[in-house]
Image 1: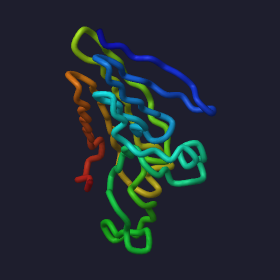
Image 2 (image 1 turned 45 degrees about the vertical axis):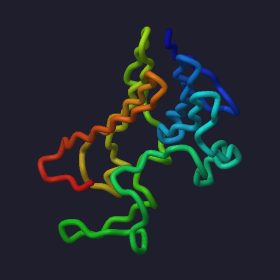
Image 3 (image 1 turned 90 degrees about the vertical axis):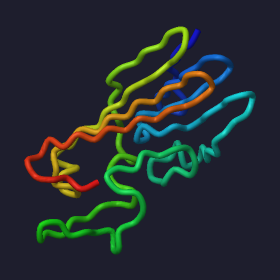
Image 4 (image 1 turned 120 degrees about the vertical axis):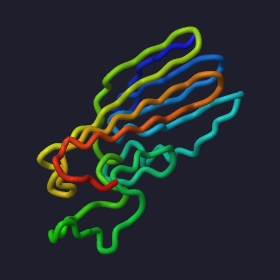
Length: 159
């Protein structure tokens, strides 16, 4: 049977998807990143906990969520429709909390869905209305990550 546990560590809230001796840990407060994967008696991810729990630092390790860009922009800026915007490395999500939108578990899986919506603050860097949804699923000794971005703007939205 699969299950989902919630726990707090050093002031942050985590979800652990468990089943068949495997687990995946997700931290919605740290951009919805996966902070641990343990399958077949092996830890599969590096995680520097000092950077995980220090909100002033970039997290080293884990699986961060990169949206709407991966990598660095020259001068941390880009031009869109004649206007220049500033954006941090790897985009908007990895430094912001995500909402838990749903959970399910049963005899063959455990999954959690997180969402991130545009706000007035995000539109300063990325002038689009959007919803980004992540679903993390543990089933059969495998982790699946589904990412869906929905453009709620009238114009095209680059990702």
